[in-house]
Image 1 (cartoon, rainbow, N blue to C red):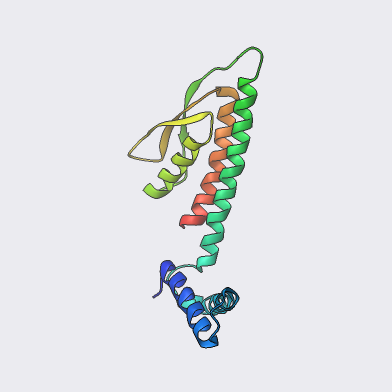
Image 2 (image 1 turned 60 degrees about the vertical axis):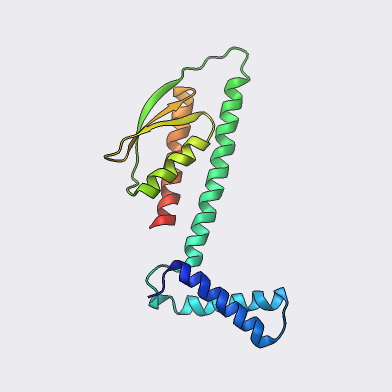
Length: 161
């Protein structure tokens, strides 16, 4: 059975073979061979042990766009809190449970949450899917982190499962 990395290599092999058989060493010929290989792999996908690799690739791109969106939204929230004439923030720690199960999934979620401004993952409980997060302002930032967590979880599950 052919797994995900093998699908990519097979597609590149088909593209190079197409380019060599056409006897034109141009990018357009390689790209057309890549599209032919993509179509062949798509039609033969029932013989593969994993999902079609373009589906997984689009899920990764979707996760990147969700991260960029959440990064911008949390940055705006932090800028609003900093630029107030009187700083009225209440930092705090709250407990977060996640639906993710594997080490890779939980680690990815925690890294994405730490990279967004205004929140820091302090501890991940080794036994399960529980973590403690420090946020800059509990009333506003907690809701933003919970919203980001739900969208990250959904996107991470699309990538890994």
